[in-house]
Every structure is written in C-alpha cells, then in structure tokens.
Image (cartoon, rainbow, N blue to C red):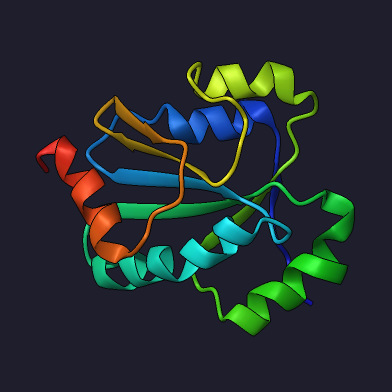
Length: 141
C-alpha cells in the first residue's frame, strides 16, 4: 500500500518559500482534471531529465484525502508516475489560493516555479516538455 503524504497550507507554504538554489516546481492537478492528466507526462519527463541537478518537482494533488487509496494510488500506478506526489488538504480554497499565488483564479492545472526566492506562476497547461523548459528559462539558471 502506497503512502502519499497529505500536507496542510503551512507545510506547503514552507516548501514554496524555500530560498535556496534549488529549482522547485509545484504542479497543482487532480485525477479528474483532463488537461492536468494530459500534461503530467511532460513533467515526468522533465523530472527524469533533471534528476541530477538541484531540482524538485512536486505533483500537488487536489484530490480529496478520502480518495487517496481508491483513486489516486491506482492512478499513479497506471500512469507510472515517479515524481514526488503530495496531497494538499488546505481547507477553504478562498483562503489558501491567495496565500500560494495572489494572481491565481483557482483553476487547474496551475504550476508555481520557485528559485532563489523568485517565483513564476502559470495558470495553464503546458503543451510539451519544451514549453515547460522555455518557461523555466525565464529564471536564467
């Protein structure tokens, strides 16, 4: 039985607010969101490609914690996801969405990129691996 950590807003914000030279990507998604599911393979590809560097990809699932064993675990196995997956249980979305990104309307997929205290946010789905890499290049790593 696969154990997937469930994090609250405080725990997620502490990951987001890390100020070091590691590139972190927080991809907000859910098993029931078709565009989210379509872009997951591109993030997986990026994770495989960058695993040697200072890089962490968090696939932040917005599925309910009650559906972890029934829906999320079988989904992860079927899709062969190897990235770090966490389930976010933040309570009222009207509160936590603004804490994560004030410009976020709340739609998914959405991705937050952080590096050395700088943040980039994309409230859209990526078409392919290249489009994610081009977005990351704004950081001038």
